[in-house]
Amino acid sequence: MNKCKAFAPVLPLCRFWLMPVAAIGAMLLAGCEVGPNFHTPKQNVPLRFSPTATRPSASGYGSAGAGSRQSKPGLKQKPNPVISLVIPARPAHLAKWWRNFHDPILNHLVILAVRQNLTLAQAREQIIQAREIRNQTAANLGPFVSAVGSYSHSRGSKNLSPNGTSRGPSEGTNYQAGLDGTWELDFFGQIRRGVQAANANLRAAVDSRRVILITLLSEVATDYITLRGVQSQIQITQSNLQTQTNTVSLLKEQVGGGIATELSVAQAEAQAATTASELPVLETQEKQLGYALAVLLSVPPGSLDKLLASPEPIPPVPPSVPIGLPGELLLRRPDIRVALEQYAATVANVGVAEGNLYPKFTISANLGYSAATAEQWFNTASIAYGIGPGVSWSILNWGQVRANINQQKAIAFQALYNYRQTVLQALADVDSALVAYTREQAHYQALARAVNRNQKAVRISLQLYRNGLTDFLNVLTAQQSLFTSEAALIQSQLTISTDLVSLYQALGGGWQMKAKGSAGKGKM
Image 1 (cartoon, rainbow, N blue to C red):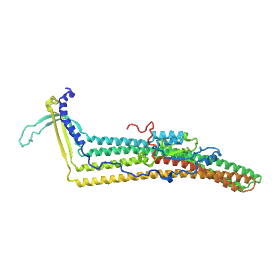
Image 2: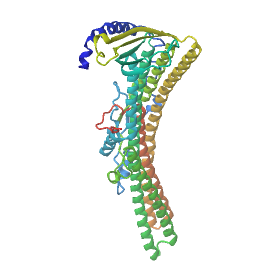
Image 3: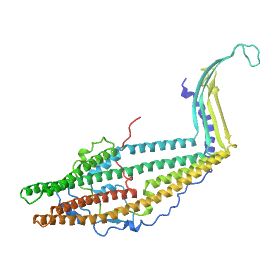
Image 4: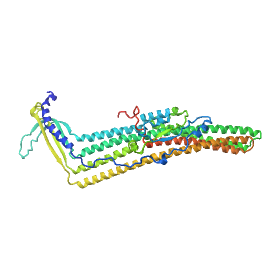
């Protein structure tokens, strides 16, 4: 017998009881929802960022120091233009802010990090997990149907009977197959509140990945820029060491002619040795930064050595930076969005808890075949079915339910306060980054003037020494001051570039990008 054709007589009966049940369920689903409804909380934000934070420096950054860097052999730094902070009429576009540094290697590293970073891959799997939790919760809105089938053969005892009399053994066979279904009608919206909470948690998982992405991009850019700054420091140190080594050689020749003294030679050698001692420290930092970038890109340490071996200038900052308005942070910063979605989930959970105060209505049904012989199993006469509503209501544990409701309300208030705190922290992050970025420019200008004056002091002290008008100690002092100011100038330029990265991070840029490729797609 064809088993599929055997079920054909049952289909009209299925429609008979499923259609009214579906109609009742649809009416109930359109009913009330227990618990409070979520509304985006009002948050007061200033119309503009702090005026003291957005005030740019008085003169152009980099103009005074560009010539001094080019006068030295080795790595030449690109001069930075005058910096201005722009508040555009439209929302600031910061999706690919790292491209503003115009560094192809940095662009390449960013793309690789987005494709390969393992922490980002974990966050992607957490999104999948949250989506399946949402799907699992939403499935509770519909009926659950189980296919059942059984075969049993039984035989009673010869010595026992219900009334204690002796009788022969009872023996029989039972064949059963069919469907069992149950449906909890979400009359008070408890399940729908659970779905709302799961949806909010899913959105929070998506934005949590964006938080990780922004942090990843900032770390890649900061480590790369810092590595270029260390390479510039190495170039300066090597250049000054070469100059000091030449000075030692010259002084040794002059000692033989009675022009210089052994003291001058010893002082020059001490200065050269001090300068040389800084190279191993800088080279260690260079390697460690390369290893840190390798970890961010999820490749073995040392894999980027060839790519990063050639020294390059510190990526210069762009001439203007669009900072937008404070209100844009509420939409752009993913950590604010995470806090908002977490608050929405906790509000929905209050409704889930309140649903336990009300009765639960269910509809149970079964449909199938039951027969004593295999030949009769799927006959029309073997059809058996049943349907009926049910209700359950826990009325003696209201104290526990009320306590859980109050607990969920307290959690919701915590999430609300966390959201407001996150907004305030975001505003402070931007203002702090703006202050650091703008004021470091003034610091750079002062250092650039110091480099210019120290270069002049070195020239004058050498000229006076050659003419016998000053002691060689003054020459060493001038050279050391020049070396210190040059190193500080490079550090200031590095700080400006990394401060700009921090500003982009505080503004919430970067997560809007879409990079090709992905990680973490392997099968379990």
